[in-house]
Image 1 (cartoon, one colour):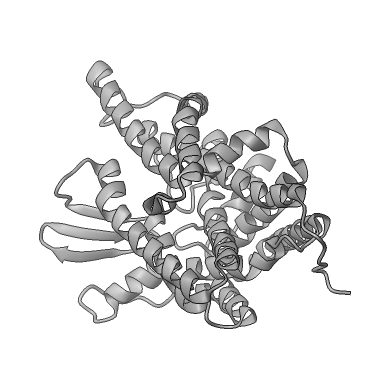
Image 2 (image 1 turned 45 degrees about the vertical axis):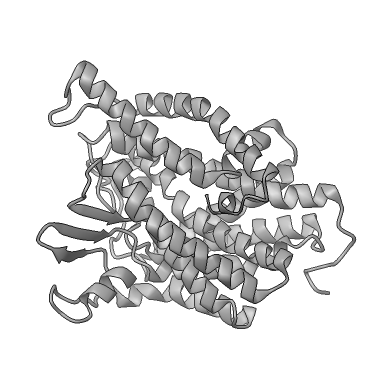
Length: 392
């Protein structure tokens, strides 16, 4: 019997199917807020990638580790949403055109709007090409891939996610003809544009194309014809299977993570060593851990249905780009205000003295941003005649 069993769609099934996506998207962008608060008010205690498990306090380590969920889950959900968009549009050409336009829009947004929020420098001397940039490029890649059979798209996704670490030893020096291309595709590096401008490719592209392709290939599981219980079971077992693969491969210090783990002085630091995975570019271990957790969370959120906390998360998840831009500028304004009032109290930075304060600031900011984000989400849902709203 096929796992995908058609039945007559009903409003409750559609609610669970779509609201679980918005709720998970909302959860990861709220977690992202915590990480960006850390990057704003805790720069005096910076962490590397992977983190130094011996030198990083556990509360900071696990706060940063939690943020690892954000980019993989968001890119996976972008792929699923692209399939759902195509299913509604009924045309691959229309879907490809939308992905291409949205992708180009995000690339411009990263360079013109997001980078300014981080640096407040204009004209900039450094442009950081980060997550919005790589989502835009991934959408452009998916616009081309979706013309292939879904099984081929899934195969491409698996090869890129599982196989890109085979390329870790390939590097090209500045001045080599392949340096710029490789810096975009796989190496986290610098691109020298001129004496006054450099680009930093913080999110190399290849593995993220794999993630968005896998999301697109999984899209039919979210069709209204698929029974909710079947989908939940598939997501849960799939997520647990991916996490099991992570545990086995990580336990044997096998392929997929350059930095090995080892026994430490106590249990908590041994666990930190085991979970210490590389984000830039995302190692196979990084993606198995985060995507496995993402699938499990998606199953649990669909099962939660109309719970109040699901509805709250959906507010954030329904307008993620608006939230992203708004919170960056609010954080920058808060930081500048704190410096103006109290000055630099942590060496070259203004910052709080402990990780618990980061959580308090994040909770208060999330509560403060809830109203404007809800307003924008309602506007976006109400005014579908305004085309540009669906891009933001």
